[in-house]
Amino acid sequence: MASLLLILSFIFLVLFLLKKSSTHSSASTKRLPPSPLKLPIIGNIHLAGSLPHRSFHSLSKRYGELMLLQFGSKPVVVASSANAAREIMKNQDQIFASRPRLSIPYRLCYSGRDVAFCAYGDQWRQNRSMCVLQMLNHKRVQSFRPIREEETSLMIEKMKRSSPAVVNLSKMFMDLANDVVCRAVLGRKYDGDDDGEKHFNQILKKIVVILQSYNVGDFVPWLGWINRVNGVEAEVENVFKMLDEFLECVLREYRMKKLSDDAVVNFVDALLQFQRESKDSDPVDDDQIKALILDMLAAGIDTTFTVLEWTMAELIRNPRTMKLLQTEVRNKNEININEDDVDNMPYLKAVSKESLRLHPPLPLAVPRELTQDTNLLGYDIPRGTVVLVNCWAISRDPLLWENPNEFLPERFFDTSIDYKGLHFEMIPFGAGRRGCPGIGFAMSLYELAISRLVNEFNFELPNGVREEDLDMTEAPGFAVHRKHPLLVVTTPRAT
Image 1 (cartoon, rainbow, N blue to C red):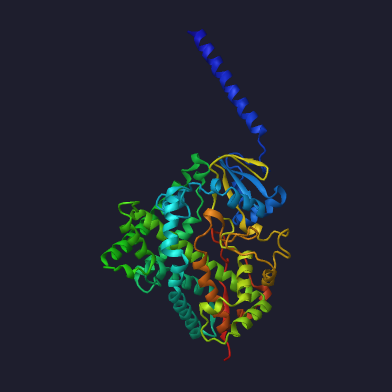
Image 2: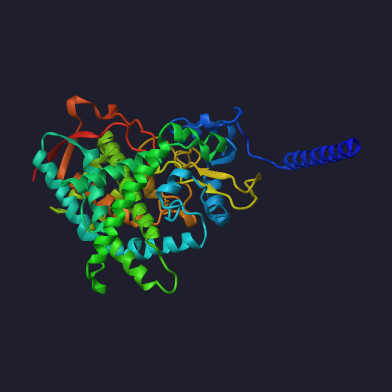
């Protein structure tokens, strides 16, 4: 018996050593991207910092355009060049098109049944098709034009009534984006006038905050208990319950209405009609609809508000640029600028591009996950690797942009580079299959609001603060806002 145990032990030892030798040999033949030193257990998580796009940009100067980090047990590749982004988002787009399963977005988005965080596959294709057909195609975006123009006019009138007091432009932009998106998605505004509306706004704020929470268990599974102890897991469940109750109420109210085919005027209407029509062929359930509604609300409001806020900050900080834009807009001799006027404003278009170059709403594109082994720019990248594209670093690359940190809209007069995902020198909305499908919706409101504001008002900073001293500090988050609200004194232009 003892001899048998000895022989079995010897066999197991030989097999173990052979496997270890094989694994080591396999790993040694792979050419992996450069990597910083790792700490035990957590790897390189500590290097991300509070503003990962800036931290990774600094690291890329040492480790190069493709860098391998280790977040706990998960390999993470950070791409910081246009060439790398082109490979990931175009040349090898399909195998880089999936998403890692991150527990907090996964839970809030109904087990990943939305568009932004859904794994690549048939479910994602159906979800994206529904969003584009029912909300984000050109015809539908144009149908929301009266909403954009009406809500922008209401914002202008509100600012005129408060002039010349100090105006919180950040709050104005948040309210504008909230009102337009809610009317387009839900069919009504939720501006806080009653308890139900206040409750909705509280839910949205909680969602934005909780999505920025970090679950160490996603990368170090045996430390998953931490979020149960610190209360994050309970808060996620609480927010999800509030969200689900609200959306359930929305769907119930809409189903009680009697709508004719030509009465489809918002996203919820369209989704419910699509659900009825697809009942027998490719059924859509309520959780799928709720997840898509959440995507439209969270992404539509936050990104639009972010771009507006940074653009006005840059214009105020650069009086010469502000003056040139005001001259172009005011030469239209229009009291109320509309979207037809905006289409004929080349300097406004250049300002839009330059603002998105310097301040992409998502500095790090939503994480991707590689679905098969591949070679990327000469490096071997294994299946299951999380991939982060640093859009912020690419659009400030001095090899691509002259004076990359300066706000110079004129640079776009001599180039065809745009922000729609075809040019990898700047990809503020991503590119490829997982590029943002809502660019047209967001930019229609953005350009109308900026042109109306600079047409109607002159701006200065309160308390004698000089333009060049305006604080441009960023706040942490998926969508990077200003750390401090943009406060200005507005004066209606002389007519």
